[in-house]
Image (tube, rainbow, N blue to C red; front, side):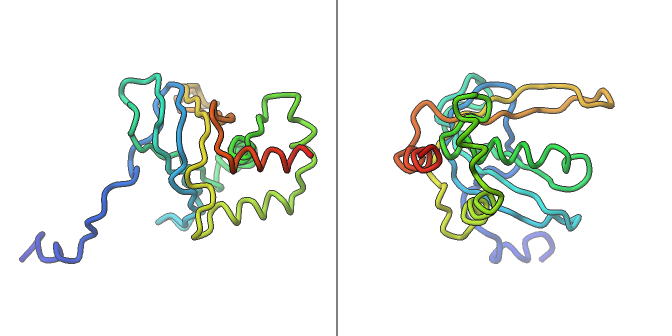
Length: 171
């Protein structure tokens, strides 16, 4: 039987992003899922699965389903908290780069952040359908190697849920 022996037991669902990542460009995306997993190396990793609504990169057109990942161990541990906060803010329709949003962001407590993150990765996937703007660009690391940096900001057209989250955060 060999390679085909287990074909009846393979999953038949459509791919949801595995292996497709953001290339340099600007994107408006819709969230498909937020997940927290343990890798084969026994490391925690966050995965944001998305669907592109608008793209400036012809290699990743509308409808493509790229993912963004964030590790929490090793060198990534230094940037993980800032990256996650930037993402969570954008999903709440707050812009970490906008001084007008600074007070609202500063007022969010650590307990609030933890509750938001816990809910975001829950089975109910309350952020599915939410939108955000992703800017991906190449940059150099300290060792001179190249990697893709991502910034997350509020979308052009936030969902009603995101508008309500912003209203709650800024009241």
